[in-house]
Amino acid sequence: MNILGISAFYNDSAACLVRDGVIIAAAQEERFTRRKNDPSFPVNAANYCLREGGISSADLDVVVFYEDPFVKLGRLLYGHFRSRPFDHRSFLGSISLWKRERSGLKKFLKDNLKYKGKIIFLNHHFSHAASAFFPSPFREAAFLVADGMGEWTTSCYGVGRGNRIEVAGQSYFPHSLALVYSAFTQYIGFGVNSGEFKLMGLAPYGEPGYKELILKKLIDLKEDGSFRLNAKYFDLAVGETLINKEFERLFGGETRKVGDKITEKHMDIARSIQEITEEIMLRTARSIHKKTGMENLCLSGEVALNCVSNGRILREGPFRNIWVQPASGDAGCALGAALFVWYQYFDKARSADDRKDLQKGSYLGPAFGNEYIKNYLDSQKIDYTYVENTDIVEKIADLIASEKVVGWVQGRMEFGPRALGNRSILGDARSGKMQEMMNLKIKFRESFRPFAPSVLLEKAPDLFELKGESPYMLLVAPVKEEIRKNLSKEERSLRGFDQLRVLRSTIPAVTHVDYSARIQTVSEENNTLFHGLIAKFNEKYGCPVIINTSFNIQGEPIVCTPADAYSSFIKTNIDYLIMNNFLIEKKAEKPFDREISQSNEAEID
Image (spheres, rainbow, N blue to C red):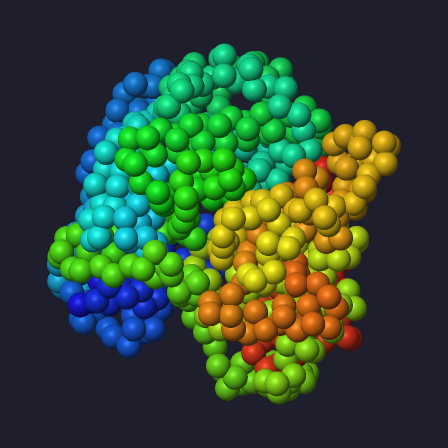
């Protein structure tokens, strides 16, 4: 049975093909259109999934859409009629958009997919919950979904057993942790639905001096993690912004504009809302454990991409194991919806072993063979060197060790916001200058943003205080005391971005200012070639960890095709590009002269 899942029209549209319970393919539309977080109907992603599965739309048994458009209309109408003053133009615009994109959705789906069969509309949070539990390794587990909003729900929890999920409790609009976090993201001057990672990365530079104010005025937090927002300070229903003038007055200043300096005040606000987010998630996890008695927890929704919070739940929470959906945003709902239909709608058996998940490392996108890559390079008259399979990992390890930055394209593209070794930019984690250089000269983004370490799974306990695996780069853990450097009194007294000058460990390029790291553990089972590269680097240079950041530049999605990769290579100061066996050196090309600082970032996140 072939089931196509679709998420679309809000943020980061995607498609996923499931065949008899096996995830065949999944991809985000942005990777094909090159429009970051593309919300449009994922016709390119859907067509890719069909090609990967070797079928046409006529071979589909079901198409499932990730939410119910008519229930969502109710919330849309509620928001407009509750808003004061009532904005007729905004109301008519929203209804027109809903009518165009959703009211005729069944016909739209059939026309755009050239499909005549069964269509199912699933509840948004069922899609999220299914994406959390069904691909997980667990036979049974509690689940927690925390996102912006679906039709009405903003978070839910429940239990998954075998081939079924059951929701036990929900929170409703407008009381949404993701929307609150996005509101603060907006106030500090980063983009909503794209800049939340920046806020999380900025937080360790500040102090939590605004926590008491936020908890007194904005969020009424209960012991079980439930909370209510004070609507006086937000514009969550229909406005183009999430905050209002009352919010700005509360924090003593207008929303920071792009290009304005990031001050210690901004850092302190970021730290405050980050700590509150962690506290809400921890309290909620403890409450869910008490209510369900489960040993395992699965997470999905936008808040589940807050890897600092996830790390604390794993270290300090009551659950023995946690598993986080790699595509926890709305893109992952396409996958969840398809799996829900297979397991729960059609009541098919599910097999789990409590060890290995079913998401295949999230390597679910397109791959390109040597013939395709060679034809592209030849057609563009691009010089290259062919590297034999036996020599690839040593060649790249040597380049990294000589402080060269390497763009790396191999295998199937990752599904979700993280590059996991197939569409990555790689560097030497031991280098004291690599973090700033890669941010400013390669990624063209703020120099304060941390990079992630990819570490051999078997060596991770030697470097990080991490319990278990982190294959999807969604857990933050402290670096171990043994590899930390002793700081002088002067170094310990530094504040704000002055802390960037301090080398804090033997792997300074991936050690954040609070001694944390967002870790990807790499196993031979999940990614043989990437594991082999890091193993060779460790064998020759005594370090089982390298920098791994997504192969894209500011404002662009992660690369998909060889053409995308070469375009990014030429636009940046990446030294070498390797695509499968083809190595390209930055020789004659003039280094790309574009630079930003932490206080003068690009317009587009």
